[in-house]
Amino acid sequence: MRWQLLANALLFQLGWLACIFAASQPWWLLGGLACLAAQLWLSHERQSDLRLVLTVTLLGSLLDSLLLNLGLFDFAGDSWLLPAWLALLWALLATTLRHSLAWTAKPWWLASLLGATSGPLSYYAGAQLADVGLPLGTTPSLLLLGLLWAAWLPALHTLARCLAAPPAVTSSPAPAKFD
Image 1 (cartoon, rainbow, N blue to C red):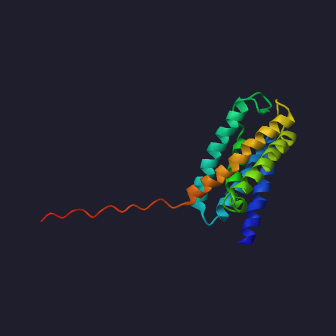
Image 2 (cartoon, rainbow, N blue to C red):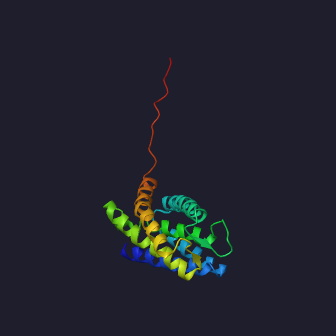
Image 3 (cartoon, rainbow, N blue to C red):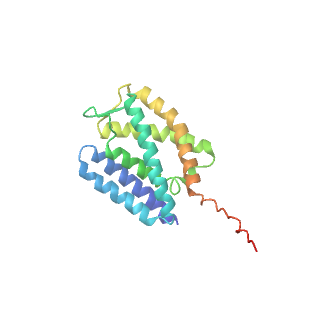
């Protein structure tokens, strides 16, 4: 079990780097996809992890698209579309929520504290390494991202918990017999 948590964290970090490199050399996306595939292959909860990956990727991409269109950050080429490497980062993050980052889920303030610090740092590193612009300036952008991620990471943990729960079993009453 411990080796799986380490593998999960390592694959996330390798995937993160591959995604950042993919900002300038798209073929690196293959490395990020390989890390994602390995995460899902190693998972003992493959089906629920895949549901979580799809949901977090969609919600995270919508959030980043909103932030992009609000001018919190921008990409080379003035695109209003979110780059594929950033969407893949969301998928990779989702694979950690029930595994290597599960320890941050409770108490909620731990997820909030980690989100407030690591979320903005990840965007900052991306800005430095992937040529992502922060039009509002570094400090205001990081402060806004910190506030956002202080709420977002606990919300993602709640989502992970909800999607992990097995669907409610409903038993239908036996059909009535008419003699």
